[in-house]
Image 1 (cartoon, one colour):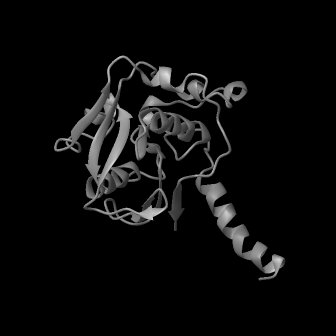
Image 2 (tube, rainbow, N blue to C red):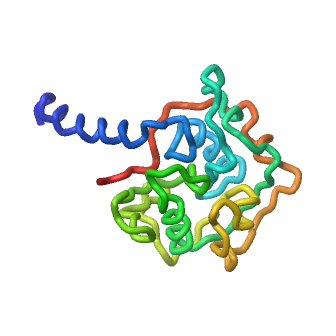
Length: 197
């Protein structure tokens, strides 16, 4: 493909993503570099397949602190757990995450270990178009180790009754989210959520 033809093909998609995530530093409006860095730190610390961090525990960092992931934490003292979730239950959580999009939502999930596509004009609970974990398509019957803040596991921020059947497999009683993220730098940003028309 000629460079000019490729440019014409890629530019509309890039502009769409830019417009869609215009509030790129607000974790309640979509994926953010700092929010994903927090999720990355949580996933790495727990050695889990996936990490989920709701926007309600994050904030938009000050401009001079954008490179410091810990500046994005609104609540540093939340505990950490790892839960075994089926792919079907994870899919349900991801549907909840984008149910209000493009409106602001404290339940929007910053993610690590997965990528998801969704159709923002589709009805709630029917928005996901694709989910992959580690580059492999999500399997509804497979079990995944998912790290999350304790408040999310307890059903706060719009996730009530979602995790009732899930089993906590690891609990980090003496380690908080703030400790895990301390000193973490924000790297390059590629959104792990991909909205479509």
